[in-house]
Length: 125
Image (cartoon, rainbow, N blue to C red):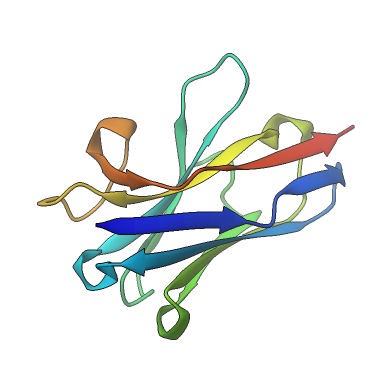
């Protein structure tokens, strides 16, 4: 089993920055990649960013490219999401996730094996 715990959410004005963290525990050696998703009120959960175990490969949704940066610290089993130039449309609950067994990446909800509890990010205009 894998446990994921997010932190770092909060309220910020448009144009501001936040840094989210996701600490993994348990069978972390079995996790090939990590992904951030988000879910805004009344909308489906959507892919935000993903990172390989080595950190050499990163992927971003078009809506956050150039503003968000995903990174990881394997020594601490933690991934991060640095969010800059935040917009009101970034308001959502942000979740970190690990892929289901047998999958390398989780690009959508159905491909996720483990979820964190989520952290709220609110961007005011």
